[in-house]
Amino acid sequence: MEITRRAPVGRPRGFDADEALEQAMLVFWERGYEGASLTDLTSAMGITRKSMYAAFGNKEELFRKALERYTQGPAAYAARALEQPSARDVATAFLAGSVRTTTRPGCPAGCLGVQGSLAAGDSGRAAQETLIAWRDDGRIRLRDRFRRAVDEGDLPEGTDPELLARYLMTVSNGIAVQAAGGATRSELQQVADAALRTWPPV
Image 1: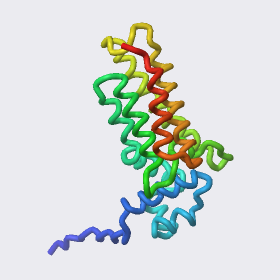
Image 2: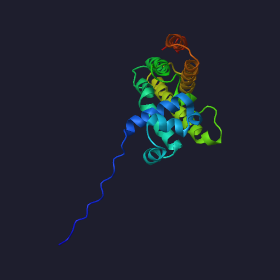
Image 3: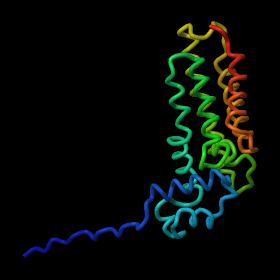
């Protein structure tokens, strides 16, 4: 008689990986990559270091996963803005989303993607490069959307899509830094509105 061997049943993790990643994201958002110690992270996540490594990899890998969660969650306004019908609507939604996210109640002030690793030593170099690539990707997506707007006649002929994209990113990044310094949502929305007053007329 042949005996069928069953594969051992995997032991449950014993924690909510989704919630743990949410907490890690908040720690990185508040303290940056280098400022977030493993003790800070595991304490907020409610798990041991061993469990963290098993579920998420090392600190650098955890940071990448947290940034991905941030992109799909609090920073999802950027992708939604690109779907707006006009270039001006894109810019308006993009800056309004930046203001809301950087002053979000119950979350750290500022932007994880901007302040997460602006000044980094050797241990934070990979995280810094990850965030540079993240911000560049945002700029490129805006540039391509504005290029389409020029082709469609929604922006004047001769408009520089790259310059417009960099302009919006610079204003958005400045909003994040100001929010981290204590500026209110109302004050930052006024900045966004002022920036839009220079938008190219159709």
